[in-house]
Image 1 (tube, rainbow, N blue to C red):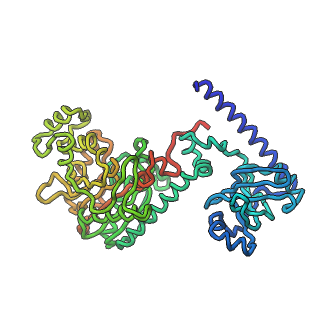
Image 2: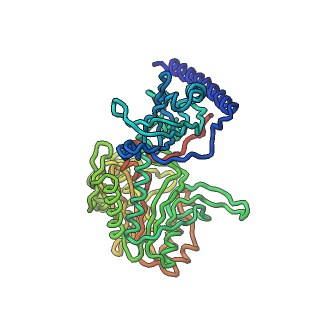
Image 3: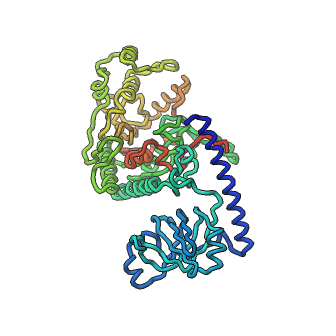
Length: 507
């Protein structure tokens, strides 16, 4: 089909929709003139569609009156009787409307002329099965609960425009049952995460969403202004520094499952507003943290699927612990041939990376050899890590809040968990030396002065908290939206977020 034909069809569809909307508005006015409220305040629902199916034999035997409400999805008028298919939160069910049962005037004047597909109705009646065995409500009453002014998308084509589905998620949920099921599964996933954390004696807490300083992670913030206090604030990049303040205060195990905001690009794996879980456990290092993360992922998988495997793309992912643990330098050497432990200088690292086709940005500052190693890892290794793999031993240069190994100050006790070629979790042994932490903040300030965008501010109050004493602590973060991508087998992060960020619509 040519672009002109496609545009012509879209224009015609818009005209048809507009005409249908005007027709429905006329019906709305007619209903009101008849004294019928098209938007009543409530309706007494006694059963849902699935409940009726489960209890059908008992309901039919006792001729129990059921009262159900839902949206009309199918409408077949056949003279003196009609069939409706209505959809509620549990599924769909058929209703049989007979003129002699609901009244001649209502049937001919209201039901046949003023009720449309998409309207929300309440139905009372008894249940039976048709000759084809379909469970059906024999309606003694039909009441309009909400008059729908916008017609639903055409049945057989549905809502197929991807961008429109994201913008009008409410229509997407009405028309596409698999989308609704995906978000129900996401909700169950989050509940399962909370259950596991509570099993491990963690306390769920809430910390500020607006921060006076940029901190907790290296990223670009959203900036806002508090008028009364006349101060600049930043939507939080991460809750890390506040959560660790709570550990200083005596909460040994805390977690927060909430939103973070990063003013960065939008892609199939990135949304500027996203959900994270961060957790901190006193008297633990990153080895203990990895064991906790394994437990979270394996138990969530089992609760969702009834087994320790889950399908993502063309892969069957095995979540049964233990997960692989491999140093970053070893993976880089395996997949690129570069041995960064043997490379002696930053310049040599840059040249080696360029020699295998990995471009290194030196326009603002010259990266260290360890920063170059991370760039090579991101370019050559990440997407190949399909089965759950803890990549460990991250360079200090890219880990400003992590504790270094006692025998190797350039490398930190930090992991990132990769599954399906994506980073799902990040964690480390937390830096609790206030002097070392202040020096690392100062390095961040120097980087900002050189023009680097993703840096953290000096947080003197956090240093003050550390000076009171943060016990040895392990911390972790899990990207909930990416975790949902994995367990929902979704193509994009937008398919796991009910209302993903979009460009401003022209309409």
